[in-house]
Amino acid sequence: GRRSERHHLQSLGSPIVIGTYAAALAVCVASLAIGQAVIVLCGRRRWSWASAPVGLAILGAVCWATVRLPGHGSISAILVLILVAASLGYLQGKGIWREGFTVGWPVAVLAAIAASLPFITGDLENLLQQAVLQALAAIRVA
Image (tube, rainbow, N blue to C red):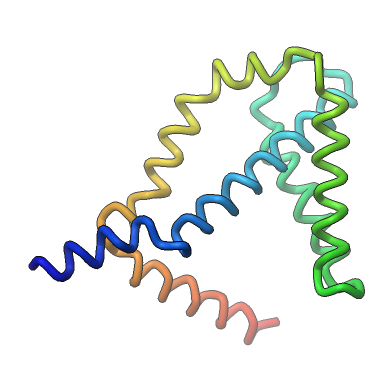
C-alpha cells in the first residue's frame, strides 16, 4: 500500500539512481565523442551511427589496459578525460554534432525510457540484486 508507494517514489530520486543515470550519461558522451573523432580521422565527414560502438570499444580497451596501473584507476580516469577533451576539441566546428543530435534524439529518448523501466516499475531492488549476483559470478570465474 501506502508505504511501498512512498518507498518507490523515494527510490526514484535516490542518490544511487541519480548516480546510475549520471554514469550512463558520462559513458554515452565519452563513447560518442571518442568514436566520432576516430571515424572522422578515418575520412568520414558526416555523423555515423557507428560512433557509439566504436567509441565504447576504444573506451573499454583503454580502461582495461590502464585500470591496474598505480593510482587505483585514477590514471585511467584522467586518460579518459584527456581522450574525451581531445575528441571534442577535434570535432569542434565541424557541424557533426548538430546532425547527430537532430537525427539521434528520438533514439536516445526511447533508449532512456527502456532503460528506466526497472526504476519506473519499482523493480529496482530485484535489478540491483541480479546485478550484484552477476558481478560476483564474474569475479569467481576470473
